[in-house]
Length: 360
Image 1 (tube, helix red, strand yellow):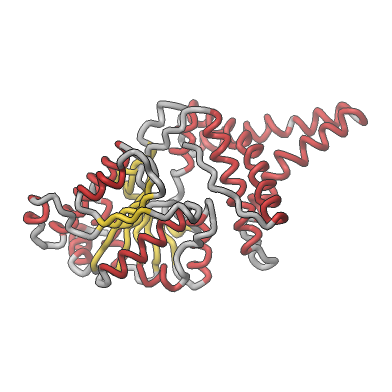
Image 2 (cartoon, rainbow, N blue to C red):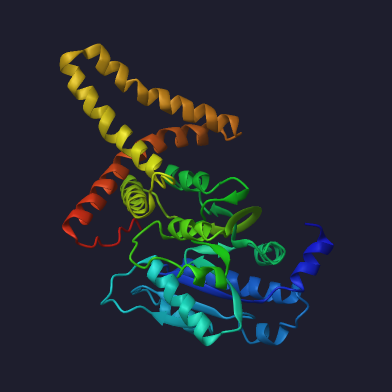
């Protein structure tokens, strides 16, 4: 969009509100709220409204609702002191990000019924300068789009190979998308048309909601602009392991919920997990007795897939180091993901709800 087009679009945007969720995010949450306040004022200025009185008093130009899931680090007190609406979830019901976002959305709509667009932000993220103006301008001229998201970056990719992996995973293609992550700008009416997030999901609630939105002919769009920076704080193999157990659980759950013959949703992902983490190792073990050569050929599939992923990353102009990290960790992740698939199957068979899987 040209500068003139952007300014014209911004002059027509409806009221925006924020929903932030968190649990023991500490200093990350403080930086998150500060970035939202700053961008809220910046958007107010770009639309021609006078935000100086609110800014002088440290008040957001747009309503902010923070939903806390059992923090014990003073998060609730800090956010309340920043002038935001605060909701502390009852711990009698299991905490999930989906439940927190739904609660925040409901409160925002009830208290600020004029809000039509909602910016969701995770409490460990910082909103990037200019994001609200650019995303709002895009949404205002694309009425068929329910959700617009941008580039989420890892703050410290150099701290660990796991942080670097997160940063690469978030570097998704620009254009129409199938899903978004936890940070995005959405039309309230679109979210309400599908009852927003599924509160029973412990992970993968964003792509599952996007799947239902797309079924209702809404579009999800990824634009090239910088959106948020994220502090994964993932520095150990254990965290990587737990994060991928959660990912495998989410893939299996979404597959079970929505996969059909016409639309095999998440079937490919679950099949890939089972192939690389179970079928090939099991066959290699069997053939190690019957035919050692056949067993070696099966195991050769692992270095082959590593090489394939590595070359693909190089083709996409990633550095040698990042390409190598990605090509090793993606196949390795299949094993904890398979445990997640098994955990979902066990919970489904037993009828028991699985507790949230945290990696931080």
